[in-house]
Amino acid sequence: MWKTLKDMFDLSPGVRRFIATEASLGIGIGMFQLVLNLHLLDVKLNEEQIGELTSVGALFMGLISVPSGLLAGRISRKNALVIGLFLHASGYVGFGFGSTLPVFYASQLLMTLGITLLTTSEIQLLYHYSRSQKEEIRAFSLLFAIFTLFVGIGTLLGGYLPIWLGGHTSIYQGTIFAASVMLFAGCISRAMLLPKEPKSEPTAPAVSAARANSRTGAWKPSRMVWILGIFMLLNGLAFGFLAPYLNVIVKFRLGWADTSVSLLLTAAGVFTFIGSMLMPVLLERFSAKKAYFYVYAANFAFTALLVAAFPSFLFGALLLLRGGAFTLLTNMTVSQAMSCISEKERNLFAGMRTVFGSAGSAVSSYATGFILAGKNYSLPFLLTTVAIAAGFVYFLIWVRPLFQAKLEESG
Image (cartoon, rainbow, N blue to C red):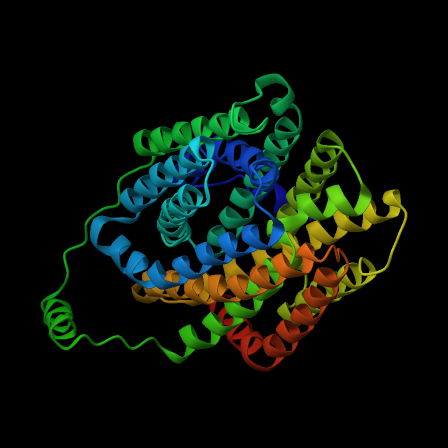
């Protein structure tokens, strides 16, 4: 175990720079995630409107994800990443200045466009900088671990900055602007520090095939891409019931102040950091079958327990464990899915992964908006439990054979 953790830091230069520039993104996103829903509630939106706003963003992401993934192959993944970060940060600025629903919808679409360009380019670019499949998995794990650690720091800051910075439209406005500054800093640092992608000269057959595809509009994802895409849909469904609303659920289910909510969600960031670091250890020490069984079982158990009414301390402890377990599951599935896909299909799969994931998230987040409007803070946990169980059944039948075959192939 300790050797695996030590080897995780033996990384190629591009990977090291990628990970080193992740901190400012995590801080900015952590601050924004904590205060956004509270900001929207403070400017007199209700939970149903917030759910509709969230689901529209997820649906828009689904519509543009495949074109964004293909665009990354044309303008380079690094350029797509940098442009995405700029648009993402600009969306934050819109939320900060906005006070009406149309402005929030425009900001949501701008932010979603940026996030889509980011998510359909970052993993492929990270893997492009990696030297082997083993480094790909370790790089993904370390990147997400650093991200979640600094999201926790940003979440902690998000609990206190509204008191210090205040705002005009709401007490959270200054914090939203601070979050945008952190994302702009990440955009500039990645534009300056990340290595350029070498331009490969396509062979004559490849050029002919590309021209033929352009003329006919052919777009034929492989069977593996479709199987893994549907798996991402189930993961998105499980994600959307809870993740966009954890701050609201904790605040109103437990009756806590914003600072207390930020402390709990900061601790959750530490648990997700631990979960991220454990991912390559599990995959290298156990078979794919055992590793996924343990992680799915933990997710099912912790989420199911949170349906019941518990004292604040026990609820918080279970929420922390559930957060670490869900991060571990997400990292395992996304990193291995991308690693299974051949280089020539990675841009396409990145788009489809986001399409299917955002479709699932749109449905579940829209449903949760209605559920929370009715002040039911337990049902989202029950629905997430059902989604996790469905994902595990699908994994056993369709996905596990693909992952196992790839692991055996790579030795």
